[in-house]
Image (cartoon, rainbow, N blue to C red; front, side):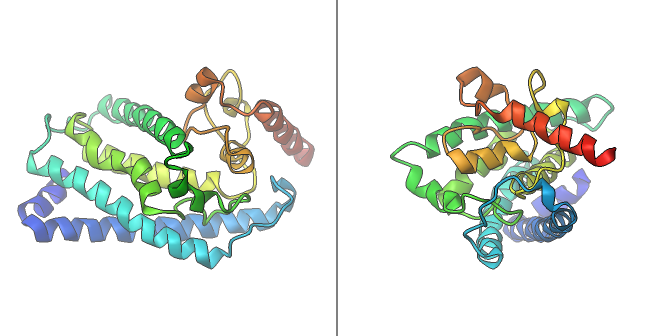
Length: 258
């Protein structure tokens, strides 16, 4: 797979735009496939709806906005992968192995979660909130809402993909895997229904479920993180009812199984 990126790098500027186009096509496939699957799951389990209020945005509006913002994300990802293949980064990517794949996947998730948390906090300040406000206009998010918003908002979250490979030798396939995980998990995090609550999503474990980001849209000043609850717990920004409500959904699942 690394050879494929080298082909794009060898083609120069045309190769860069070709890589971005390929990444964008993949992003659209993920957008519509994940959205369709989650919509079907939501219809099958209406009792798992998190909020009672209806979404204020039409799905088509969020889809159009998401398609535009995903083009920016694809450029960011393309910059990182293209520059790595050209040898313009501080370190060449580590070869794929039994240890490098899980190690760099987890390291990249942790770094991106830190990047996302603090960038997200900055977006909620008075100076920058105007760029984040379009994303928050929908207090009740849907599976199509994740990428809907402003270009500045997108750059705060996804410029990570353009920059981190300059200092971290993540194998390109692992980096792509991270991006795929990011897009799918974020879509699920906006879907408005809780299908994945478990003990691993509440204290003392660090993982998250859909309720986490849904509460961020409800209350605005809680639950800023992306993949893990570390930063919110350490900084006191986790919503005080989050853990109990996760347990409540676990009880609902148990009742449905009985």
